[in-house]
Amino acid sequence: MTRDSLVSQIKDKKSFLCVGLDSDLQRMPACLSGEKDPVLKFNQEIVAATHDLCIAYKPNVAFYESRGAEGWKTLEETMKCIPDNVFTIADAKRGDIGNTSRMYAQAFFKNMNFDSVTVAPYMGVDSVAPFLEFDDKWVILLGLTSNKGSADFQMLKSEGRNLYEEVITRSQKWGSPDNLMYVIGATHPEKLAQVRSLAQDYFFLVPGVGAQGGTVEDVVRSGMNDQVGLLVNSSRGILYASDGPDFAEAARAAALNLKKKMEEFIV
Image (cartoon, rainbow, N blue to C red; front, side, top):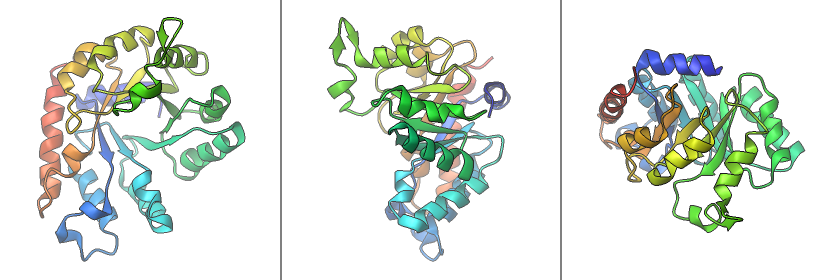
């Protein structure tokens, strides 16, 4: 998906909501227990209930690959139920030497046709560059993450700068705002404005809204640019809004609540 297509979808839907499909087999509603593939049925119902409210879906690959071949099949079938005009993110956090990264890129971009994949920058440019060779595909680079352990390395200082600042600044030489985004956690609202000053034209994928404590208002206040520049993710708060037969309706209500908050900030 091109940048123009992504921006157009945001404006048309008046939303920058990303729904995380962290669909855990152990948390499936009891009403799906008779299904051959409860996770696939769950995902299909969630997508059907929310696709007009969000502009992206983000399956967390770990929830699928942990189930072996069956889980990969679920992920492939899930991709088929997502409308073509909705941005897709393989939350895989890959990052290896160049030839291995090339195979990962082929897996997610060619074989599964994701629009983007999350990538860890620790091994440097040669682990990221292979993902940037595909037209209309995106790298979403881990910049400043929302987990508690992000302070272990990302906040380390060298010559007065945090490591995450160096990552965000240097990586802009590898890609452009047309094929590179950054993961910036909503649990660091005080850092968002500072990160935006380092990467003014780039999109940010922002996890941590909802169950992890971040708010749409804080993210917008600190991180929005003139093309919105945000994909705000919610996973558990939408997926598990209900564990009953009304799980899809409850998911829609939760997504609609976030979408309405976003509408206020889109001209």
